[in-house]
Picture 1 (cartoon, rainbow, N blue to C red):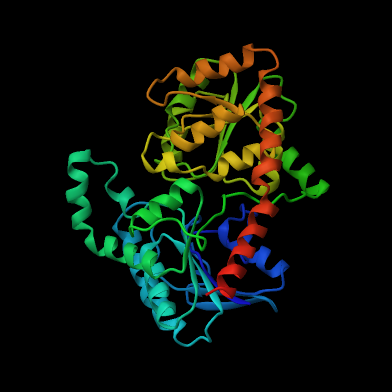
Picture 2: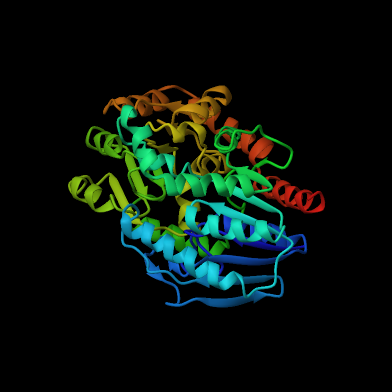
Length: 412
């Protein structure tokens, strides 16, 4: 089976720096392992580094079963803004030009968002009668108006009618919808007024269970020693990810100011500089920047728990982010303000505790409760590891997605 994957804004096999593989790489690897041929379409512009990979549209032959095709676009300097929308529009235009010169696939897996490239590829392949599985991971364009007062949201969304029209077109022309949770899948099907059907699927945002080479792990440990984390007598609480407006880090700063616990906010993003300024006199709050897989593993092994300070947004209530699965994989307790399905998962399986994002002292109170309750960390840790192995194993997760794509192709 020859499959096209369209997924922008993620690390690729050609990237350096050891960034965590996401949907595009994970699915490509799982398909190749089963003997399928993959053409991975992505942007030449790297969303994480905000730099172009080659400066032009280009093709990389990774192996006999994997080809990466980069599409040129203008790029952008900020996660949010008109420059990013212009970039996606140009990306879609250039994609439309390139796909017409390629031999058709047997099936396609199309990442959504961004809206414009997904719309271009879905429309083209639908006319060619190619089965399409659309992977919905964010509620675009709904999230554009979410910060507004509810009484203005409907009007604001009406002004975004081209994006709404493209969104509905993508979902209607797909042979099936894949998403990150059942709740997000229901959001997608509701947008086109249909029920969930057998061609739809849920694939959680899990990461590979990679074994880190011992020498690489030693290097990562030495690197963390410069921050005083290895063999620390003080409990360490960590966050790894993009430092943006999705999360509210003010409570971590408050907890660092009012305790001797150590806190790590690893990653980069538009809000990192602000946190650096606010933590200049806080030696127990560490912001090392982006970290690679080995450094992330060592950090997890030395953390008492993971903090996921999610803002209270409607779309977050439908989602379980990769940070939850990463924590469970390492058997780490989770301390989060996430609403909805994530909070339910936490409470029903006793894998951590929640705090109120609007109460500045709530996180610290929760941490103190966990630390001061005998055996609570070990209980959460055991439950977390068991839940991951039972329900969220990366291999099972992506083997199931490959089987679903095979089913879709055979029954189209």
